[in-house]
Image (tube, rainbow, N blue to C red; front, top):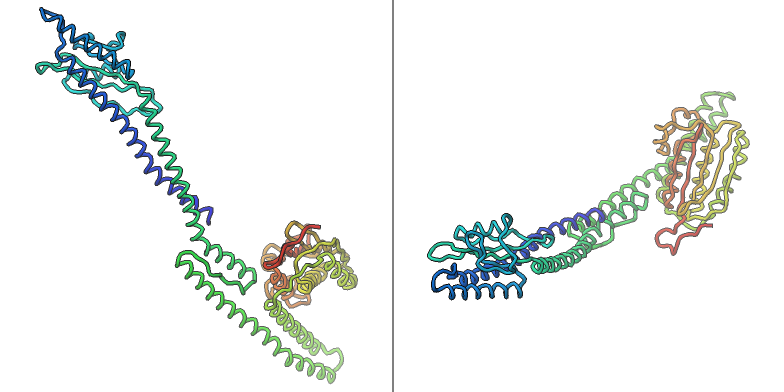
Length: 475
């Protein structure tokens, strides 16, 4: 969730910063250009005032007019030298009154011509289009020279924009630096905010996983975060307490019922045995009653074992899984041999964290199940291996196996395949196995074995459980 929420916040903050930064950059560029345009307007107004009374040299006053013209030319040349801006005063017929440089004339088309034509209409040319840092354009400003209400000439300036574009670019770099700094601060704030908001969620998720895997004593520790999440944590703890209480009552009921029914059932079986002595030997009805009574006794014993397995806590310790599996193979070898089944084991030394008693009981149930359903002349294989953080015991048989639908239900309480109803058992053995393994963070998986049979994989962790110094190393 953290990896999904944080990019969303970053994108939103980046969008906000862009929404603020882009208009600011545009405004900065416009302000820089407007400053230049205002300066050019002032300059053209000054040149227009100098050129206002300069006319063609006619009559006795021609010398004075030439003097004014020379003054205008001198000003334009100085302006060109100091600022590098082309400037000129042109009559209505395009002829120059004065211009700098001397080889600069009005073009036939382009921005200079458009500005000149506009100034002939007795108004200053419109502000030029915005020049961006990547555009190598000039700024053209034209002002009319008016005498006696008529436009007699036009002052035109053609300014290079290199310095202006440099100032805009520097301003943009400052804005980008500010945006980057703001983005870094925003990302830091987002990290703190998401961490603060999601910390209770992470704690709640971890506790939920612990409870789902059988550690019902786990509770959500007090953590920061929004008040709603803290209230959710308290409600979750209350719910977990109630669920644990209900499960404890259920387990206690099963254990008590199993225990209380054993004594009457034992007495009933004893009376049946005494009654059988009074009946002719080989009576089928009494034999059937005795078989059902023994089956009921086995079911009660298994129910009690299941209740104890679900209630007890595993005593985890470093265990040689290979040696333990080899011991169980040796213990079950006579039973398999009596049935005509070959039981083999490949059990190298492999250590893991496990409860030896619980794991032995689990392996007994799995091997017993494999031998029970394997036909005579077939083989049951037990293989031990380690893979990184886990150790596995794989029991493979060549029996009839299970269908996909049956694999989904194997291990459920009292469930047995319809094809195996005539085989002795209560349907609780694999449920007890799963409970025993879950208490020690282990698991059991059932798969089909081709061409026929069942593969059961018992997995136990090699890493140290919580509260233990460290995990195991491969060997």
